[in-house]
Each structure stands twice: as C-alpha cells, then as structure tokens.
Length: 360
Image (cartoon, rainbow, N blue to C red; front, side, top):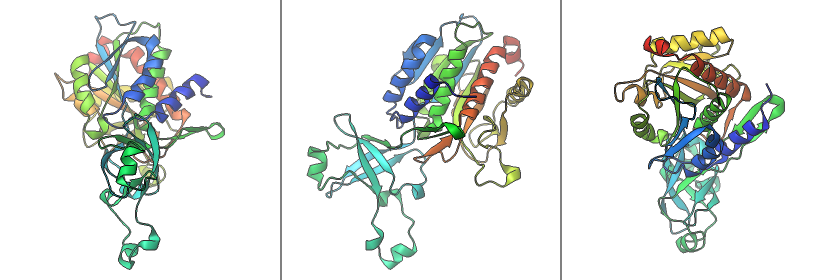
C-alpha cells in the first residue's frame, strides 16, 4: 500500500524532532499538531502527552495506548580546555557504533549545533592502541569546531546538562518502501498511535481510549510510571519500534523480520505479556488477514512491565514495528510494517469489548 503524503510527513517530523530522554518537548509539539483534532490533550510535568479520545463515553473499560516519545541520546558532561565536549549516554548505546557519527548539541540559546563524535586519529595511536582499538565512551569527545574552553562557552554557547542527539535526517525510498532515519524507537510507534486514532475518528468503540506519548522510557520507563497512575487503564496496547533480527539471526530463529508485520512478544527481560490477551491478539490478526510475527525475546524491555505491575495491574501486549539497527544513529523500517501495525491496533480497539477484556 502506498503511504499517504500526510502520514509520511508526520513520520518524518516525528523522526527528525530532537528528543533525548528528559528533553521530549519538540517531539510533543509535533505530536500535538496531529493529535489536536482527535480529542482533549493534557500534559504533565514529565512531558507525558495524553490524548483523551473525543468519542469516549466515560462508562466503558479504558484502553491505554502507550508509545514513548524519547530517543536515546547524550548529555553534555563537561567542556575540555581544547573546546571539545565530554558527554554521557542517555540510554543504551553500542559504543562501537559511535565514533565519527554526526550529532546535534543544544546550546544555551536553544539552538542545535553540529558536532562529531571523535577519538584519537589512527595516525597518533600507539602500537598498543592500534592492536586494541576498543574504547569507552569516556575516551570519546564531541568536537564542535571550538579551539578552546572559552571559545566553546562564549562563541558556541555550550553549557553542561544540555541534550545531544544524532544529526540523522529522515529519508524515504519509495521504490523499495524503506524509511531511513533516527529515533524509530519509538517515534514509529508514536506515528502508529496517531494514525490509528485518526482512522477511528468519529467511530463508536466498545472501549474508551486514552493514548499516551510517554517520556523517559530509555532511562527506566520513568514517564509511564506517572502516566499509568493518571490513566488507570483496564488494559493496554504498548507500541514500540523493536530491533529487527533478520540480518544476523539464523533463518529458523528469525522472529522480527522487516516486511512481515509487527512483532508481538510473549516475553522479554521485563515482562511476560498477558498470555490470554496475547493469544487473542494473534488470533484476531489471523482472522483479519493482518500479517504479524511473534517472538520470545531474550533481551529488551518496555513500558508493558510498568503497566502490568502498577495499581491493580492491567494486561498488556506489545506491538513492535521492526526496525533494523535501533539504538544507533541510523535505522531502517518500512511502510508495510507501519501499515500492518496500524491495522491490527485499529482491529483490536474495535473488538476489545468489556466481555473480551474480562476474559483475560
């Protein structure tokens, strides 16, 4: 299916928006633009954005849609005498993929200025350093082109505590249905949420829906811990950009391939997704002819663990759009998988009756 221009624009704007954990404001501003026609919007001090569907009746079970708005990034730790920036990670980066990445550093004026993650050039390495090139993030710097501490502070307006994000810009290869960009974990999930709500606009559902773009997931599911107390859901659908395994896993073990639909996990290191709810979802997808995948994850975690263990507990499943190379500066995903995820979320919301929810 060809993607609509407005939907592609939404995905691009969400992906490009800088939003390291704790600094999600610009992502929330983008989401507000698309969510405004869909219902009442509220925001809390954690920068969680709540969308209360305008068709909600107030006397039906509450389904919480969750997608986190933050991306893995960095923070300015200090400024060296050379003018280079020492930084710390916000979220789980692979240190081996960082050197030479272009990044954007927010300065005291709120501007995002370019820099490059750098290490000692090979020309100046000792024989021992060349033989063992692995390094820690603390060995790297971000070079913005400053020539001294004073230059970095006075002319570039760098200060400690400011966020840093990859400088990657979204691209769409229409001929091959490929999206390239940053922050698909979980901006592609945010896009699924907004598009599903748009398609359901004006329709009566058997449930009330509160959608949340939650903050700070990458540093400990922090925003969701607040959001779940505000929403008090009876059940939840967690939307994610999840790591595709089809470029390195052995054939029989591939469980999250691109262009095969969203991945529904039975388990990860943080949660066992509600088994009866999970099976109902997989059966519904088969009934509707919507391609989905299922997996048994040996790593990873997400907001489902928070939702299932807060208040009185609410069953949750996780719909993950496959993304190659998440937790790096560059990812790849597809409209095919985005579209299939939107379709299954719409089908779920149309069929989550009070009786079905009670059966879980």
